[in-house]
Image 1 (cartoon, rainbow, N blue to C red):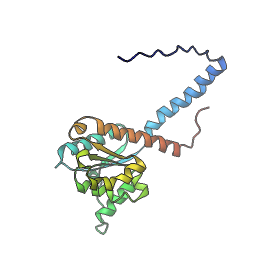
Image 2: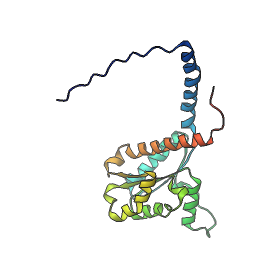
Image 3: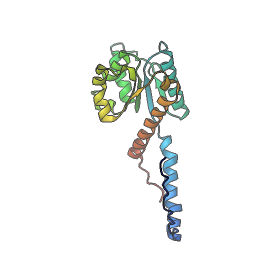
Image 4: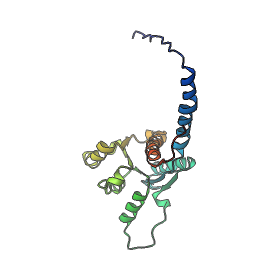
Length: 198
């Protein structure tokens, strides 16, 4: 049986009136301003992946899209987006334009075709930094690993999932929301020009 550890009871001195006023009027005001603003930082999110033929994964894409919309984000399945009328624009170029315009691209891999759709953009520094790729752990063969290793090492944005447990649970949704939160902080910091309350 492990011995319990008793932490020493620290009794810090109270804040001085000046420090307490500064904490309340400055720190707390800034903190509340940031806490309110960051989740409202707008994002456009595209979700690539399987269609209704892989019903559980398709439903997960829909669930994530709907959750993001409830959080006031512009989230779309790739097939929700209108196709260009200009037939001279190849499908690959359309996907590149979508991914370039989006703030976050979520890829749920069910087939090698889904993986190829993401892999064709991993050489593009702008796009690969905003990808999050979910791959079934059973699919992590040497061929898949070769495709995804650099992406995972550089951006930590390749996330294996166990089918069906991680699909029926909220794991994928939670990982997308975590990634969105990280990116909202970065975007808020990069785009905020108004000074914090002081």
